[in-house]
Image (tube, rainbow, N blue to C red):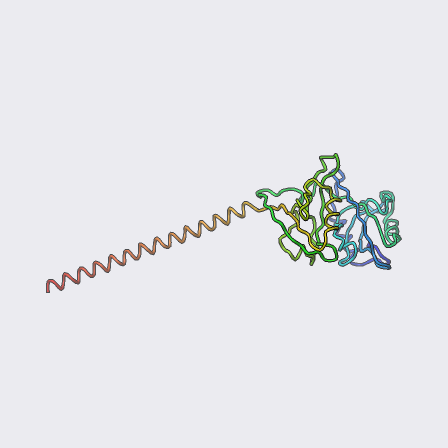
Length: 272
C-alpha cells in the first residue's frame, strides 16, 4: 500500500509483482542505514510498502512515487526492508499499523532500512579490470541523484563493503552525466578519501557539499570486450594487408605483361 490517504492502484500492482519476485534470504549478511525525510504539510512521503505480521514477508519498500520526498532523497531503494519508523520496531506490527505509523509521523520521519550486503552490485564482475576517473557534478535541489550502499561497518570486518552506487535517479545530474553506472565504487568525495568511511559519513559529505560534487570513481572495464576489439582491429589490418598484397601482385603482373608486349613490339619493328 502506498503511504498517504488513499491506496494507489499502481502501488497495488507493484506490490503483487514484488511479492512474486522477492527472494529475501535471512541467512545473507545485512546492512543498516538510517534515513531522515522531511515533507511539506499535507504532502505524503511517497513510499509504497508491502508486508507486516498479517502478510507473508517483512515490511519492504515496493514503490517510490516519482518526484516525492522519498524518491528525490536518493536514500531509499525498492526491495529493501523497513525495520523501524521513528525508533519503533516494525517486526510485530501489521501492515495497516505500519501505514498508520507513517501517515501520523508529522512532517519528519526517521526510518531504519535493512539491505543485502551480498548484492551482486558489490562484487567485481568476471573478466574485468579496474579503472579510475574524477567526475564533476552540479547539484540540483542539493542532490546529485545517486544512492549509495556499503562502507565501513564498525569492528565487523565481514560486513565491510566498498561504497557502491546502487541506483541512479532518472533525470538527475548523475543520470545526465552518463559516465556513472550502477556498481561503480566511490573512493573520494571532493578530495576527501572515503575508502574506509561509513555510509553515513559519505552521505554527510554529499549533503554538505556546496553546489558542486567531484566523485573519484573506481569502475570496471570488460577485458574480453577489449580483447575482441583488438582482435577485430588486427583482423581488419590483416585483411587490409592481404588486399594490398594482392593488389601489388596484380600490378606487378600487369606491368610484366606490358613489358613483354613492349619488347615483342620492339623486336617486330627491328625485324621489319
